[in-house]
Length: 398
Ligand code: FEO
Image 1 (cartoon, helix red, strand yellow):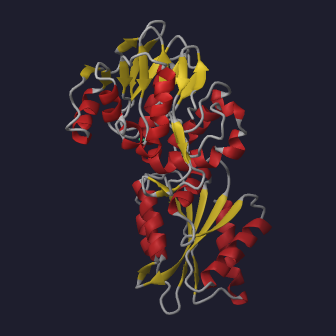
Image 2 (image 1 turned 30 degrees about the horizontal axis):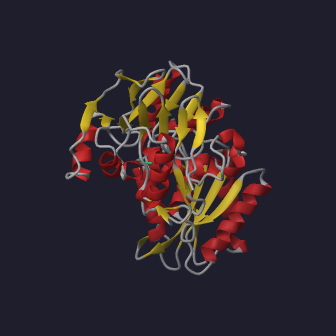
Image 3 (image 1 turned 120 degrees about the vertical axis):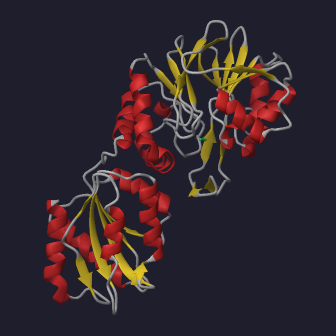
């Protein structure tokens, strides 16, 4: 059954949702599913902006045929060559041999790499500032390099005042029948997924997102049409404000996360004591997270949310417990900035993880690693109460 949705005059959503994929990019768990959005323009000329992932190919092609309703496809616009949006290019160009594929110079290079045997179609190369007119609608292309691939274009339609934003402003999460963000309680249904999507996929490229936000500032945008998640037609400021914070590495909330590694439960018990002490001293937003049991993409999302991060780590093979090492490596890879870290180390004969953790964290920009370290042997006991107090005082006062 087709699932075509009208978005605005002559603009239709022809995407689909996948609830079976376990991991996006074979990396990030997506129990909430994911949507792949594609947009059809039913103007004097017909156009499609992006295709979809291979996992929803049947639904996507059914939607495209329904939207066309017997017309031929004039343009296939490719804003971004990542396979979750371009997997159907060879199928679409085979179905509509007269179609003109519209893309950037670099996107055509990537297209030839992904589809070396399907290159016999009309090509129209576009760059920033170029336009494509389909009749009543004229789309102006805006370059968005490294958000989060190098060849990314966005397209602005000044009739619908709509920004087709590629991966920017997208989110994990399948669509539950509604296509617009205002059909949902976005904060309840999508905000955590949007943050996890942004921080893990685009998080490294804050400067590039800032450049796009500055370009967008000069446009009269009343709709945002991303490649994942719902379409925005109301309260765009909610999303833009989040993107402003996320892309400048400013924490969203004044919270604390206590991330611990624990082989047998002793460091876990100490983490609970740290959290309780922080609450006793007035901290209102404290979350305790097991570095082994929590997928690192969720930890990264929490890092984008809060200002203060407590890392509590046992010694393992003379170094940092491997899941904690992986978490710190991921933070470094994603260019985490503007955060306060507090470190605790445990070891039965050699608690020695604060220094290697601190050395790595010190390489991050605008990061403070508190000098007060909590060190304990095997387990935290009542005799460590003063040390615990000093540790949580330092976190509260940071
Ligand atoms: Fe949703 Fe960069 O692909």
